[in-house]
Image (tube, rainbow, N blue to C red):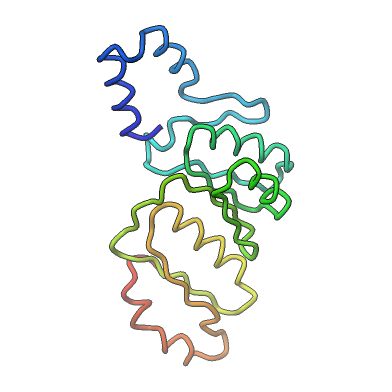
Amino acid sequence: MTKDEALNFIRTVKSGEKSEREAIEFLRYFPFSDVGCAKIDTQRALRNGAGEVIYGEGKTDDEILRIAEAIGARGQNILITRTNERVFERLREILPQVEFNARGRVISVKFKEPALTQSYIAIVSAGTADGAVVEEAYETARFLGNDTRKFSDAGVAGLHRLIANLEQIRGAKVV
């Protein structure tokens, strides 16, 4: 639940659009909802402004899907890290706005695009082998509302490749 959703909920109870009994029924799932394999934090967006992040490694495909479906039913943004294409294909049947970054093994479901920061984060990697980590970091930072720029293959043995991007990297709020 976001701040706006909480305010709207209070307004509907005060105006009589929702009865007190309906309010109790709605609130009984706070602050979490138990879906069997996990307890979903239903107040995360209200507390910190960001949607739910599901760490997929170690979870079965079915567990990830059960969690994501419950969060998606509430219309909350979801980020799933350390996952796979099977989960993406199955999730696409339920939530058509799903996107998959195969290199980073990250799935995102956005019901609402986050407003991006004015400053930016620079993600700098030494070589091509770091690509999966770069993509996971990029998707995570963007999900959390950060403007983010990638500087990949900045070089281990070739300092000149790093120096070529130094001005942009120095302009970042976080590197």
